[in-house]
Length: 115
Length: 115
Image (cartoon, rainbow over all chains, first blue to last red; front, side, top):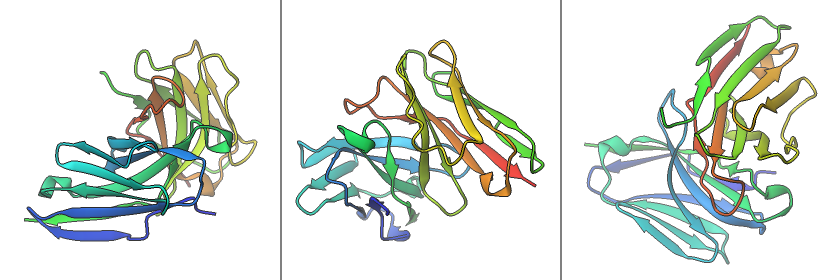
């Protein structure tokens, strides 16, 4: 039972355009959502997060949107840069129960930004 | 350094041997987590420690896996009688505390290969 899903294994975008990465979840106990970026042979790097009490959080070029009713979140990168090329993981944790503390990750989306 | 440090970065061993993986969390972080990423898979939670509380071991795949955290800082993940399916990248993360919307910060991992 995969509680966090990233249905697009890969995404290709032109430099300067918007990249939109999507994530769906099934566990209604999740209340904190994060995006991580991962380069080969490195650990995931924290990018941005959002609490379930919000529907948008912005940090520079990165914006995360949360739609609780649809159990869907997305990461927007504007403008996209070649250095953004990496694997992006969506993750979630909960306020209680078995989801407390630990992160549940999606399978990742490989983003390629072409110059 | 200011980040999470893991050692060794790579470990190759024969099936049936025991291995120990080490994690030094960020100074002042009271929560420490272990995850693993098998080839082509997302990150899978193994165990976490929060202060002096009993660890959450719910993600450990078998009793061959164990972990300890000494003095509330350094952690060691031990795999006994290794099997080929244990081959993966083992990632450690730390956060200021568990829950409370605290992002987890990851090390670069230990790539474990079982021959």
